[in-house]
Image (cartoon, rainbow, N blue to C red; front, side):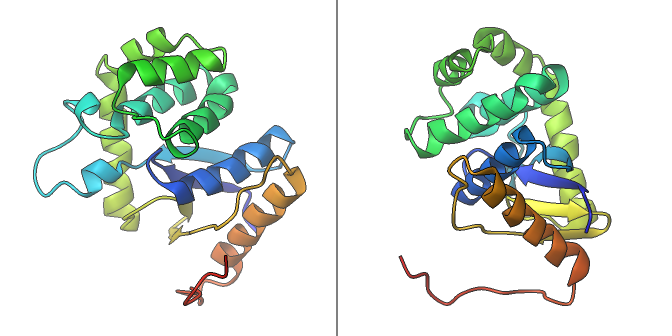
Length: 198
């Protein structure tokens, strides 16, 4: 089983929220994973022409994603808290992540200088990094959505139906199962319940 892997994210996706909460809870509890968080813009993936990188505030999720890149690169010790908070803002509070002030307030709420992060996110380099990460994901692994788990040359789109609710054992076992399937059973190409009992 691989403990070094990448996972794509976009704050717009509830399944990404589920997977990334498992990752955050597991990592914060000391899980032995070497994770690279890769931004993949669903807004860009759905563009028929043009790019979202030049005007990130006009496209849902993009400015928040750039803020995530800034934190990942410049304040990695604060990244996970901010990462989960941005997912929760979108999916638990139904806040509009195109709104710059929403992002600032969410980041301030986890002890990060939100205004400074957003300003840095709009400075240009984060958009270039986002474009490069997104384009590599498409070209190298044919990524089409989030969350996609990437190990070596394998990339697997995953939909987890539950959140860890703060339980580190649940988080670790869930992610370890995903990684075990990616590395240990690549012959399984698709496995999907026809209906969800809820």
